[in-house]
Amino acid sequence: MTPTSPPAITATGLRKSYGDKLVLDGIDFEVPAGRIWSLLGPNGAGKTTLVQILSTLIRPDAGTVQVAGHDLLREPEAVRRAIGVTGQFAAVDELLTGEENLLLMCDLHRLPRQESRRLTAELLDRFELAGDDAKKLAGTYSGGMRRKLDLAMTLVGGPRIIFLDEPTTGLDPRSRRTMWDIIRDLVGDGVTIFLTTQYLEEADELADRIAVLHHGRFVAEGTATELKRLVPGGDIRLTFDSPEQLATAAEALGASDIDEEALSLRVPSEGDMGSMRRVIDRLDRVSVTASSLSMHSPDLDDVFLTLTSQPATTGEKQEAAR
Amino acid sequence: MSTLSLALHDSSTMLRRNLRHATRNPSTLLGSVVMPCVLMLLFVFAFGGTMGNGLGGAAQGIDYVDYLAPGIFLLALTVGAMGTSIAVAVDMTKGIINRFRTMAISRASVLTGHVVGSVIQSMVSIVVVIGIALAVGFRPTAGVLGWLAAFGLMALVSFALTWVAVGFGLLAKTVDSASNMPMILQVLPFLSSTFVPAESMSSGLRWFSENEPFTPITDTLRNLLLDRPVGNDWIIGVAWCLGIALVGYLWSKKLYKRDPRHT
Image 1 (cartoon, rainbow over the protein chains, first blue to last red):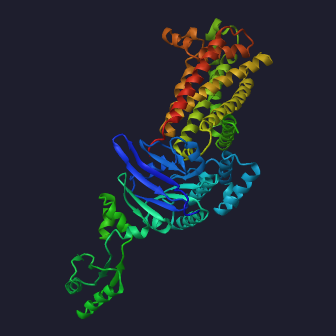
Image 2 (image 1 turned 135 degrees about the vertical axis):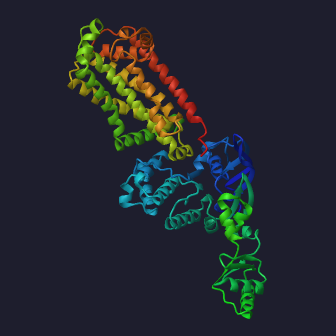
């Protein structure tokens, strides 16, 4: 990848609605080549719709899109040759074995027989699906195995741009880590990854740039660090053993954010040692000991919740993060 | 490679996939053998005596099993078509179709693979059904040419029914409804001259029976296998098949080109 390589994807004025429901409201963006670009958003934000448009599955109502240097509407075949898609619902053939699924992909990419055998064996090995697993029907695979097979199938054609639509949704933590390692390796090979996720941790772990999609518009775009700067500093949280201790401490610290039921309070902090020391000094002066003390610096959760303040589903989390 | 040879390559890949599915899931194939055979046994052994006598002159002095069996073969084809609808609906409701749609492959190959695969499966099940018919007393007198013509006709019927079944499979929003919609195809043999000649039906039904596709097709197949003159029926039957195939093909193509449903 040279620094001058053209962007993998550029979109301007992209718009899509289903009936009255506006899903994408004229968005513009650019995905640099050879990076992981993550699209973050709550359920129903339009993430999957955007992936479906960029991968030639559905047509936008308006806007121009270039994928791998090809116009999406005029040259869909050229776009399809450059991309690979792994969707939210594993797109494997359940009535074929893992090995047969990969051989099917090889056949559809018109690879010579010997090359197909070699590549299939290599991918089964790389995704830890070799041996007995390779001979089992994909319908009997666990969620994590299916996702791995799905991604392996996507890799058969050697795509330059890979769309990963919520690749770890529903996976256990161990499988998720495995997927992350695989994704990182792909970028090492110079592939561009367009990743959608609802897990902030995932975007923070993997993405070079993150865009937050909310109600069909981008509400923020930048690196994880840049996004974290969008929300004010963190706080120090203290918990006490009795209401009396809580009251004394609250007075000494001048805290207003008090939770009497949980016997806890929070004081704003810049996340440095000095502010922590000041809190402890003041508590010493009134002879109160906190039963627990923790420092909380803003993370992507705070950014996400601030930018997409959604009632109902995220309300509870928002409460906890305040 | 030219566009055509690419399309052929992809279609044969998809065909192999569908035939492999058939071996993994033999219940579909079994179903298209068992149901027609149960009907055949029921009509031949339980009702056959009475039905045969009741046919009178219309049966032209042939055994009831000889009258019935060709219609049963066609019935087996309609049951086979139901399997096609289900297979297409399964493909469309699972993520795999979106993978195919985002690959640089011949788009039609998914459907062609289903159609060719289904016709092959139907022909296999027909051979089994014919074997069972022979075992229960079916005595066709056709020569080699007659058999070839009969198989050609059955393949054509299967081809036509399969395109309609593909359309049902694409139309269905769930796999369950895909298994119900082709029922309409299965009703047609029952209302044709499969079990009794159209002349013996009440006037309204008789009009329907005389003008629906399965009557000329059934009569042609029966006459071919019993080595009797086929008259004009075969032209009407073949025309029906070509018409149904064309309509089914255009309909399926239209449904397949739609954007996938928003999920």
